[in-house]
Structures are given as structure tokens and as C-alpha cells.
Image 1 (cartoon, rainbow, N blue to C red):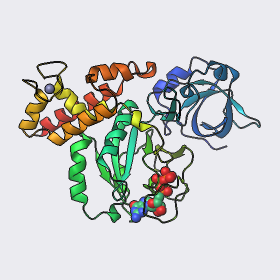
Image 2: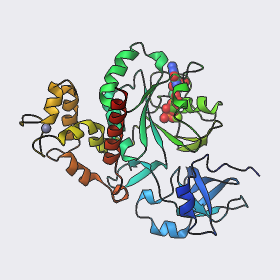
Image 3: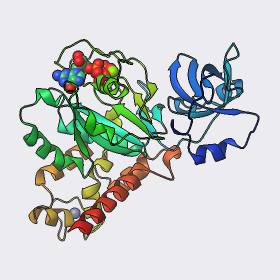
Image 4: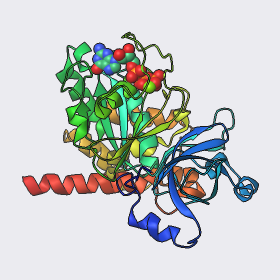
Length: 363
Ligand SMILES: Nc1nc2c(ncn2[C@@H]2O[C@H](COP(=O)(O)OP(=O)(O)OP(=O)(O)O)[C@@H](O)[C@H]2O)c(=O)[nH]1
Ligand SMILES: [Mg+2]
Ligand SMILES: [Zn+2]
């Protein structure tokens, strides 16, 4: 019987505490999903499970179904033939959400209980600052900390230029450069992964998410595209999958996100710096264009903020059909019940404040 180190795969005290409400059940973590069946890892190894009739009956949105990364309560923790039964989903501490295709209101969980979101983008064809901004918006909503992971450094000959451009939109988020073509090209991501931590890899199809994970695992655990460097999506990975790393921690591989409906993301978090500034504008509904005592315009004049960035902010606001609303109203508009108490905006603000504090501490 293979004993699984459940703490290593993210079973922290909060889940253990929550699980004690029913001592007749066992805790497991969902590692993949095949139609109505879930592969779940428990202290005694993997088993296949289905949801209870009660869960099925109570479902109101897609996000009420178990998702990859969820901690669930099962009727057993050993494979004794047949399917185990999932009776509860423990409260998610974070979740990366996509709007389900077609239905604008239904939400689907891409990965749950993640600590860090790796926003993966290749340094050749996929490199696009607007895309980073959109991904950051969704990432902040997840309640996990985003990290920008640039891939295929071997195919880029103007790295410093790209990093400079990226810095302007990254808003203090860490940026890592990787290449899966060299032996040590993946080492920069290693520091972010450790025992008990969960990292989700997201990004367009073909940027090299699965290849990078294979590097971390040290073997070809995941299928990747055969060599081709045009980034044209073939969607090699077709389902989300949680993988336990030999060196500790777990990663979640996801399929390319082209269709993940991220256009509808709340983009305001991406511009938390502008938001922070606008709290100091004279008028609380300042549009940062021609008003007197506008803190955003002042920051531009003082060289602390680029005019282009404000331009992007205003443009995205328009695109996102939030024109006329200030960020507070956008926030209220967009918050789902699920994230009512701990939203992405709060996360983004807190993150920037802490970063600034650290920076000041050094100078
Ligand atoms: N030159 C170069 N090619 C890479 C690198 N990393 C991955 N590739 C290639 O890029 C292609 C796509 O890699 P995958 O790992 O399958 O991409 P993915 O992001 O998992 O794609 P989906 O599963 O479709 O979302 C493969 O042909 C890889 O060999 C890299 O660092 N440099
Ligand atoms: Mg893949
Ligand atoms: Zn202003």
C-alpha cells in the first residue's frame, strides 16, 4: 500500500480542521477528471470516485462540482473495487475561474486551492503585453499570487527589451525567464515550488507549459507537442491534471487558455497601481484626463507612471464595458458571491503595498 504524504500535496491545517465535521469520511485531493469520474489521491493512494446524489442535486453552477485541486470528503480511502463516493468539497482557499463557454454567467473552476499561478508566455510569437494584462486580471481574482513565467528564452534575441516592456505592466509581479532547451533553463521556477505548495500553469496553447512541468518532474510524465516553434495551438494537453513533484509540492497542468473566456475578466486589478493612485485624486470619480489635482496625471508628470499605461487602462476599461464606472463600482459589479469576502482587488492592493514597503526598507 503506497502511503501518500498528504501534507506535501497541500493538505494544510485549515482543511484538516474543516474535515473533522464528519469523522466517518476520509480526505482526498482531486487530481483529474474524466467526464463524471474523478481521480482522487488519498493517504493510501489513488482511487476513482463519483459525486454523491446530494451534491448532484444541490448543484447550482458548474463551480459546485469538484474541480482539479479540490480537497474532498470520501466514503473510503482505499481502492476496494467500484467507485468511491465524494460527499463534500472542502471550502476552496483559492480558485482560478473561467467563464464557461457560451453561458456568460456560469463559471467553471480551472484549478483550485492553488498558492501560485504561473502565467506562462513564450518569448517569441506568443509575447503580448495586452495578454499579460488580461491574464493578471484573472489571476488576481483567483486569490493565488501570480508569477509571470516567460518560456522559450532560446528563441528570443531581444530579451532585455522585452523585460523592460513587461516591467511596465507587471506591476511588481515577479518575472521569470525559462528555456526548456537547456539543462538548467527551468531552474528559476524551482524556487517557487516547495513542499505543501500548489502551482497552476496557465497560458496559451503551445507556449511550453507541459514541457516545463516535465523538466520539473524529471521525466516525460506529460504529453507535449512534437518539436514546432510557431506557437500555433494544437492543444496537446486536453485536461487539467495535478502532478506530485518528486522534490516536493504539486503542479497543475492546464490546457491552452485561448478559449477560456478571459476577455470577461475584471481588468481593474491589473492596474492596481493606477487604482491606488486614484484614491488620492481630488475627485473620487476622476477620469484622470483633465481634472485638477489628479494624482494619476501627477504621477505621469513626475515620471512615476507612463502615459501609455494610463492609455491602456482607459482603453481596457472601455473594452470591458465598464466605461463611466470607477474601479470601486466595477469591483462591486463583478464580485461573485463566492469571492465576496476576499476579492482579487484586495489581493492586488495588498501585494503592491507589501512590495512597496519592502522596496522602501532597502533604500
Ligand atoms: N525552442 C523551445 N521550444 C520549446 C520550449 N519549451 C517547449 N517548447 C516546444 O514548444 C512546443 C509546445 O510545448 P508544450 O509543452 O506541449 O506546450 P503546452 O503549453 O503544454 O501546450 P498545450 O498543452 O496545448 O496548452 C513543443 O514542441 C515543445 O518542444 C523552449 O523552451 N524552447
Ligand atoms: Mg500542455
Ligand atoms: Zn485622477
